[in-house]
Image 1: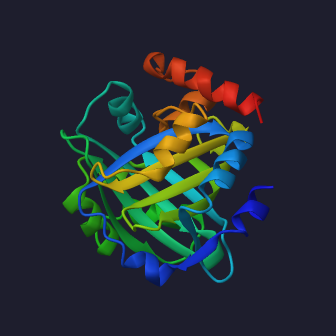
Image 2: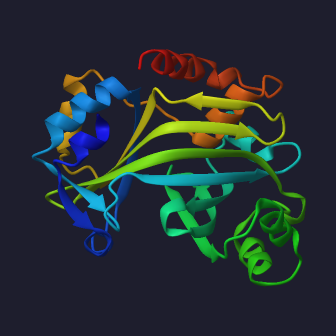
Length: 258
């Protein structure tokens, strides 16, 4: 259903997308169900174009997150620290591209992302590169990461499918993630959230956004959702998660309301 609606959108190429610079970017996330997403896509068709790469409009992603043995990065987010980081390897499955990324959220709630390209390799090889004390990966981590990269371990991996929309004024991008699946690499628990949809609005400052009025009509409100933290909290009951409990409950409701 979702893919058939997206087929009705006018496409925009990756090259055209690269020319859209959101210099004063603000990000807002929303969580909803697949049924509501279908209604939203129908309503938004005249206002947005869909990114198309090699004929694909729905792109599969795979991500492996790394943390310290004590899950310090998870705990920093849980405890509300604004100066926090996440480390991940993100793979664009269709194009076989892989990036080591460090995301840093500063005291002004701005997110900064730095990344470097990795060659295709199984997870143990990537982990070995992260632990190395020499080389390009080590230099990248030493310059940007506040944690000891030699102790990092894979904590959780996820898979999802992404649709990327851009408004006709080229002042915002909209990423829509669905078919979420988590595999906790410490507890070995697997969690499918197929009915949950994560929408992220990335716009230039506070310029008017066509999607915000449509979301309001559909009663979809802003909702924080970190794939890393929610994935860990929902697959490891031993982790501290007091501050995430209400978000976890609401996500479970969306999962049940496909």
